[in-house]
Length: 121
Image (cartoon, rainbow, N blue to C red; front, top):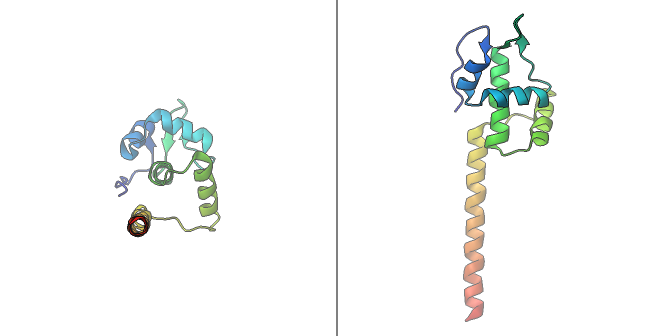
């Protein structure tokens, strides 16, 4: 479940790191990898994330850690979503689908195992 993002205009990198549970050094790395993630910088050079930047960080985290996509896979998915080509998949939907697939695979394994035992007798 996504954390509640406070209603603020800007967030500093430490706040974003706490909200998203993504370390600041990873956030800085993601900026170099994902063109959509471009927080503003104040005159002192500090990053200022907007709410949509925080939401994007959460989406990237979901793609990389939840769906286990590679960086390239996550970039392609985000690009497709930004073009409206693909509907974003909610974590719960993805998790439920994986559980159903796993259950079906276990049932098939059970059937194959039972069939193998009968043939061996």
